[in-house]
Image (cartoon, rainbow, N blue to C red; front, side, top):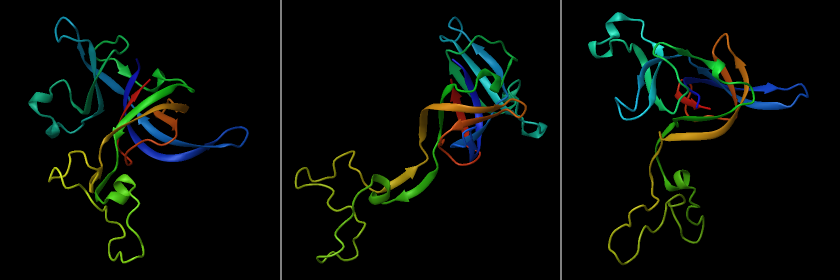
Length: 196
């Protein structure tokens, strides 16, 4: 399995030779450095630990970070064999490959039932006053409490989202940029996990 850590740059569009427009998301993918190799004999499972964005300022590095001076560290199982110190970049992927991207979605704060769950709201007429976007009844006579799992207003967004089968449209190897077809969760600068 191929794996890279990246950052969302922005959304844009590309045109093919026939003039057809494709929406793409630009992603700064790598370079990632292998920081640690975990084995079944020692840790109980096989995995590689990758680092992304090296910390340059000496005063930002603590004793516990010695040898792993990176801002973002992620671990992935079932990776291609690699050794500590190896660098991974966009050359892992080819144009036309299908990838899976995981990221944290944009936080939207506290939202009502209409926006959060797509509720219809109440009547606009027939005596319904000041409750166009209320959620209505939330329970019944028995039991005398709200059932767990009831869809209600609350915090929305800021969840881990995984988008599968995104096509790699273009690769800029010189700048470590991937152009992936379609949208990716999160705002600009969101940390991404790209699996192929």
